[in-house]
Image (cartoon, rainbow, N blue to C red):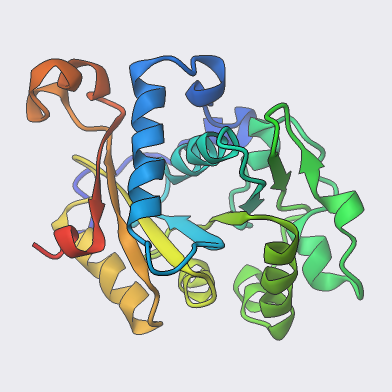
Length: 252
């Protein structure tokens, strides 16, 4: 028996068309408000240490971490925070499609060229205060590129230029990329969809992150069914983003 309840084909739509930005297209909606709640909960999960870099990952592919990281980035930028969203999923990049920016140069370029050229790699978005760093050319060795001193230096430089750097990383169980990144940043968020990622896969993800001493800020449960949320909000949040669980709560 695998770690996932349902074996589904990989969702290729996000790679072709990007993910939905409801916080941009419908900012007054109940779902957009839920993203703002998630942002606030993440902020309060690290009162003693200011978060400058965060990784979003999930147990497996096509589980919503790109949608959540992009929408949470929008809500942070709406606060006047200068945010950089980095497409660190160099195996299935999608951010350039989401924000309709060039993908000729990006993270891969910064990690393989001699000097950091932010002018040709970091792109503006329609959202004020939000910038994106696309993947660029898909490399044959993503984990090797991420596990370098140059990546360490890049994170330092990016956090000098931006108030917050958000990394959209690959699934933690599938490849080692997320573990590598999680070991280098201030905090990690795990996205787990109800009915797809079961307790075993979430527990395995947590174990893999703890091996590299990642600071797990919490877990976001998405695609929650209305009948499992109850009440007024359940009917709206159902099928989208059901809740945020801090690191202490997730242990229960």
